[in-house]
Image 1 (cartoon, helix red, strand yellow):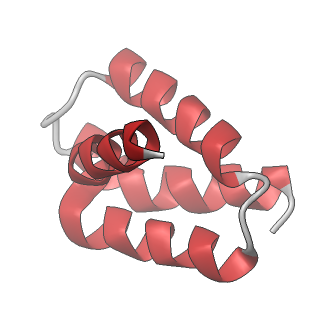
Image 2: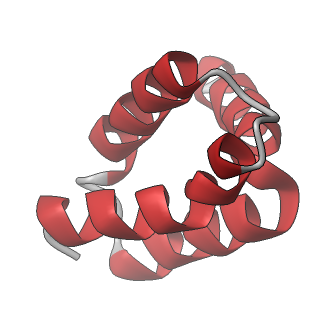
Length: 73
């Protein structure tokens, strides 16, 4: 996915938490931007897997996992 498609997919997947008032919109925006930067050079299958996990676990859940995984390597 190109960067714009990736942004749209992440915003769509993570938007529910913000819409329901479960998260701070500014904090979520920062996390989404950082996640786009992290995923933009990954293969498309990995990008899609992250987006599906966002839909399932929410952005906070995948954010914590992703950052833990990033620090291990």
